[in-house]
Amino acid sequence: MHDSYDVCRSCSKRIEGGVAAYAGYGQDGSPLYVGCCCLEKMSELATRVYWWWEVDKRPDPRTTLWRYMEFAKFVAVLEHRAVHFARADQLGDRFEGASGIKERLSEWQVFYLDFFREAIRTAPRAAKDSPSSEEVERQATRLLQEFSEIAERDRLRTFVSCWHANSVESEALWRLYCPPPSAGIAIRTDTTALKESLGDDPDIEIGHVQYVDFRKSFAGLYDRIFWKRKSLSHEAEIRAVVQKLEPQDSLGLSVEADLSKLLKAVVPSPFAPVWFCEVLKATMRRYDVEAPVVNSELLSEPFF
Image (tube, rainbow, N blue to C red; front, side):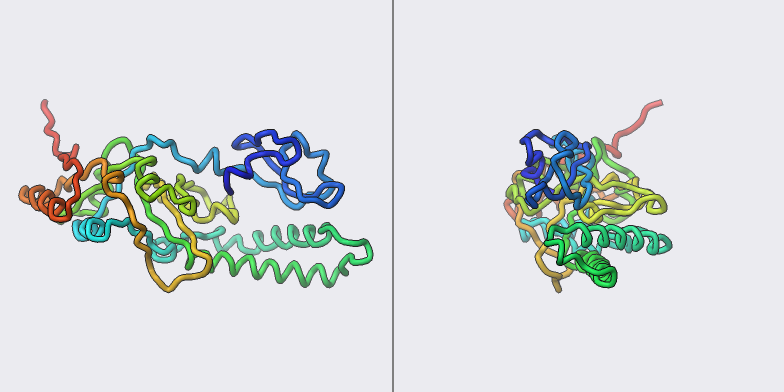
């Protein structure tokens, strides 16, 4: 979904985030995209659209983001001056890009078969061209198969860069991605800096991940890559997503980034040895990259 669709094409009234919108056909057979304000002008409904992107997914431009990584991976960022985007099927979560859980597959199939049957029966055409029941069933079954194949193919053509949204550091993520006594770093940035560092590329969508109960919900065509299981909600993830036209052999993409915009701060792991900070600074100088290197909040001392 893009901002250009955020207007009722019948009256030019803005369709506000979170309000239902409808796609279908007018009396003359022309395509319409309308809000509730103009629903009566639609003679045939193709589908109801829930405008999720504005409300649920789009992060505040000031959101602080973190990326925890091993030192070697940070050196790769400096070397290539790029952000790594992993192919969706390589992210380590077998539910990545899933529509739902397998035990509800038949329920999902019934829903979409009914949807496709209705769309085929009500598609604009001359009365004499109305399809037979057998033809409706054949086409609906074909569309369901293609719909399922699209979901599988999307995993091989979608690339993701994952970031943790938090105003402060996460000790849990330090231990997960840079467990002691290894040396690692965290990049601190924000949503605006990430977007600008990637060149404001319109092909890159940046959005909140939604943590859902797949026992109760199915992911839609546009939100599959932004849905994950509730058990992973501790990640508080914001992700940047880019899609290619066709499945790719590459397991990841290096997307050029302006590091002077991206790196608001670089934080050495609180579990790293004391000499690591100087090694980190020297490495950044060697690659002619300037950014504040700041101590981890976890090194603060308590008093009693």
